Amino acid sequence: MTTSHGKSHGCRIAFAFKREAGAQTSYSRDVAPVLQKHCVQCHREGGIGPWNMDGYGHVKNYSKMMQEVLLTGQMPPWHADPAHGRWANERSLTAAETQRLLSWISEGAQRGDDPEPLPPLPDWPLGKPDFIIALPKPEEIPANGVLDYPTCGSTCR
Image 1 (tube, helix red, strand yellow):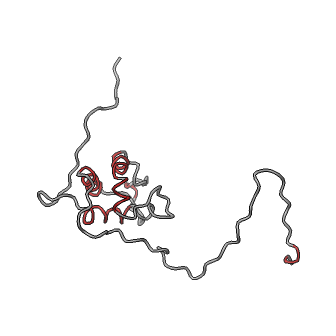
Image 2 (cartoon, rainbow, N blue to C red; image 1 turned 90 degrees about the vertical axis):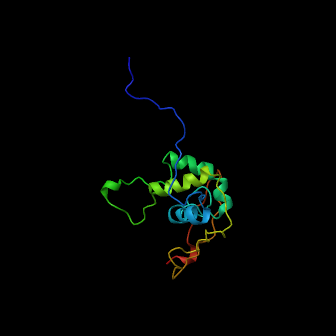
Image 3 (spheres, rainbow, N blue to C red; image 1 turned 120 degrees about the vertical axis):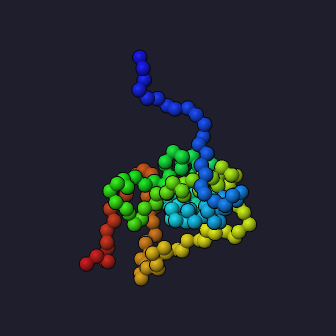
């Protein structure tokens, strides 16, 4: 019996992108702009990403996980078919951007001497709203038992 397909075994593919001869991938010049463009909107305090890309320290600590999710296609999550148009909010990486990140990680994810290039995101990315509604204090709900049905009292009309 023959198998038409199977899992391939081999070595990790080494990625390289074009840069000056002998120059290492720069965190501030090569990596941070890609993260700023594609990742930081979700990977920030209060965002949907599970960890914050708020500076070199966090990015370096998660660099091996970044390598894994980039190589397996889990990140960035973009499932729209490019054959059916371009999207204004597209977060997918180009092959060159992916190679840039993977090269930096494989070179040891070095910081370099440049200042931190990831600026903090504004509290209101779309601009401060005209009006903010304060929500009422949350109610305590017991784990078991019966709750009385709330009535309006004199405030209902």
